Length: 204
Image (tube, rainbow, N blue to C red; front, side, top):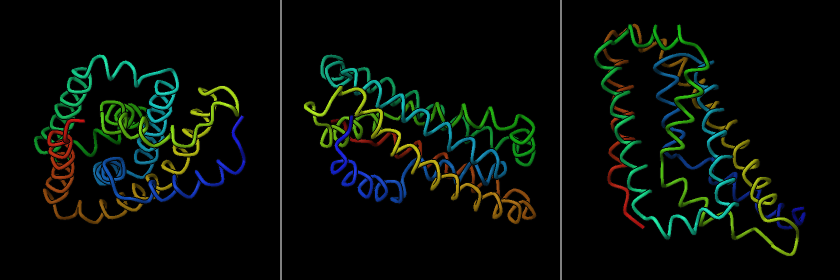
């Protein structure tokens, strides 16, 4: 389905992108600080699942929809901004209780949160539409199948790297927790920074 030489060229490019600090990595960092290692891994899995949704939609022709309805990306963007700011407010309002609540709700909530944050980031949509098609070869087989293969490579690499960052942050978070409200400010600051980054994203 995918030409081996094309896949060989895609893997290091995808790995380089996975290693570049971005919104997903910062979110898993914040999740690890806010909760624990298991939640950070679950959040990373949610992000990878959302990535597969993005590549599936791209393979089905999302580019044409985006061109026809540019306002849709704007709507998605501001939903994402509002959600990240809500997470920041919740973290500040409840402090240590927010960390305990995040642990109590377990990995499923962390997975859903990671999924929604990635899915509501139009920058990921634009990235998938710009990056993945460069490696797609229509003559090699079904286009959607190729998108899914490349998306799986991106998702797997991102899962491993972002989960590792989140696990490291959870260890750091346990130490910061001894400092009382410091942990809440750090976690909330990450969410606010992500929201600001998303809000200031240039329209394409």
